[in-house]
Length: 235
Image (cartoon, rainbow, N blue to C red; front, side):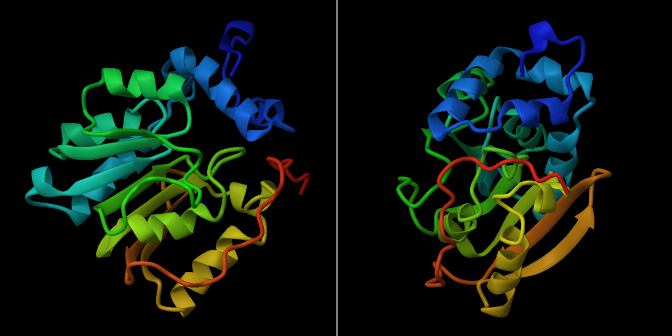
């Protein structure tokens, strides 16, 4: 994150610098990063917002201006920008960082912008609101908790889609997700909460999971919350 002190951006360095941060500390870090986030992503040729948006477009080939989308962990709005380019006009943004949200708002591609604390159960988003939820890089070190999946189910209409794009390695190296996120994917499938319609590695090294929501809400038990943001596993 400290781009002015580094010649290049390294995601592994970024992860290590997040170790031990509280929610408040992580939010402050994101606030400070907001001004340089886009340039840091350019350093690593980060194309996930464009790639995932194109896939979203494949699921909504027509009438995109009427599709209601929520961009979760929206950051500086790179995903919203790409969705807007291909005809999606009803997009809301959700992010805990006011600094990131300020940049996102400046793009003029979002209807509503919600500063929410990592999409936990206290969020203000209404049930059955969206046709589609897009989460690009939200399931990352110190960002969304595993239990955010329950809220994604709640706010997306039955029949709608959830697009999750994350570093595949995060499933095992981030303690919040290790032996938690993948099993929850399976629980949702086995209990008729959603059906996974596609799962692939796209872009290289990143998991792209696409699920269709089958219920308004689920009564499945949520996972125990971890008290602090977890370490990156050495495995």
